[in-house]
Image (cartoon, rainbow, N blue to C red):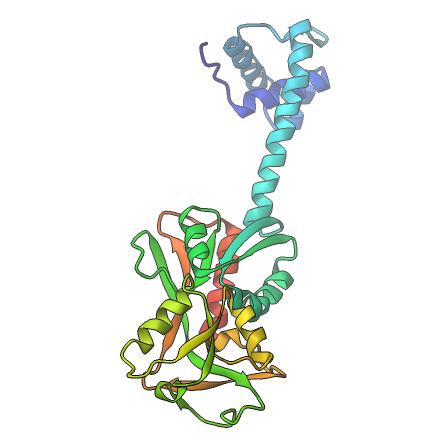
Length: 299
């Protein structure tokens, strides 16, 4: 089927002329001369291969085909106006949707501060937070399900840009009532014989911990394992053991659990913003990304 070519100006000229039933009135409405307007309508009719308007010395009337085409042309122009408005809304951040993938500790203790400021500046933009494990965050960003991610893994992925935000230390989580709770620091070797609560071996946190304790003469033993940090914290609160966790995983001013830094070796992780190198963010997503970067630049 041959492709019919005409431009928006020609379609608009036809619709206004049909509505005004006058080339002169339509030309005035579109700030055109009557001959220029007439040429636009003629080019549209030529492209369609059919006459849309019947011209007389006193009036302009629609043909049967023109009457039917007018309905479709109006719908097309209205749809285009709506599409342009939606794009304009997104550019000016009046509406939109952003999907952020992040590890649970970030969703609980970092993202709320960012989203509060973002909601004030862009109240009509919706935000979907995918709070998942580090592996799932990485997959969501790689597969395009998330605009960007916040995690501590992914810096080795060549397809991703990893922008470091902050470093956090691993601490030994324990009840405030524990005899070590007032300590400034604790050596890993002191954990020998202690009952530990650990995240499962599927966790990226567990991999870091196993690497840190691999060279210890008497490494600590995990008596309890949980799939998520929240579960490990609950067991620590219940007095079932101690847990090695990133500082960010401990809620601020926690009423039951505190964290003491571990040394020999010190263990840190770097939280970063993950984005596919080939992905250009939309205005709303870019605005939220900038909010994240600004928060940590001033922290």
